[in-house]
Image (cartoon, rainbow, N blue to C red; front, side, top):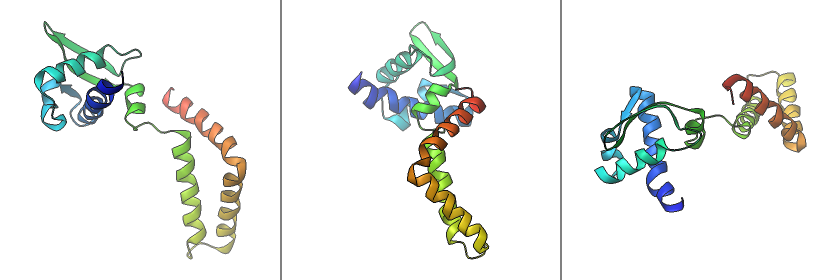
Length: 144
């Protein structure tokens, strides 16, 4: 899987998900310019992505030569291209917001102090517990 995945299939997946977000449907010829792949390689990439289990797309269509279009990127596709939240990314964003609140002179000293205490708790081992909670929330909200 190594080279074909990293040099052909994954870059096509990244572009296909982005294209679907903007246009809802992506056809193989929509991506030849942005990926730099020729007709043959693009068709092989589409066929490989269509055969993935679990699927990367909720819908695909083909002709006598292979898969020609995709639509409705799945959770798996979004996770692969970094468009799905992870517990770590949510926790990092929370800690960053707490740091900003600590440094914000327009906040009361009480608010800045609470932000500092919460950040300390999260960065001194509590992050694992919060990470588990965040994972459960994400799974519940997004159907993971």
